[in-house]
Image (cartoon, rainbow, N blue to C red; front, top):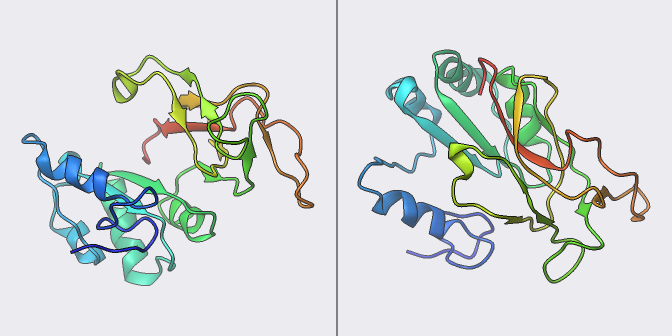
Length: 189
């Protein structure tokens, strides 16, 4: 089965997540399951589960939001990949996470791959999650506003990077905690 939909786990192209799905499925230390229903959050052990939500395009409301919130409250780890929409931030708010995605396009006029809209983040923290990572290329990325002093920044862009303004012009540089990929180390992950 293949797909051409952006971020689809069965899309093998550059804009798909088939490589991520294949990597997880081939790791003997990982049990992976593709779920499309939040009822699964009630049956898995939160302390041993990482839920990855990729580019949500519909809101998590009512019972769905409550299931995800309960999963996080009970120790589950939630990773949200946002795709320049409001649903990722709404999900982060629903689970009471501090972090929010800015949404404006991040650019770097000096450190990039193929163009300034694909900045290369070379500020990689010494952390188990980033072991063996020297840099990360962001494809039309944005800044993560951690909203908490308890956040550990894992990857940051250069000081040259900036967020585009409303008129398409390059805006002011992101604050030191923006333009980064981070892990919220507070009780809500």
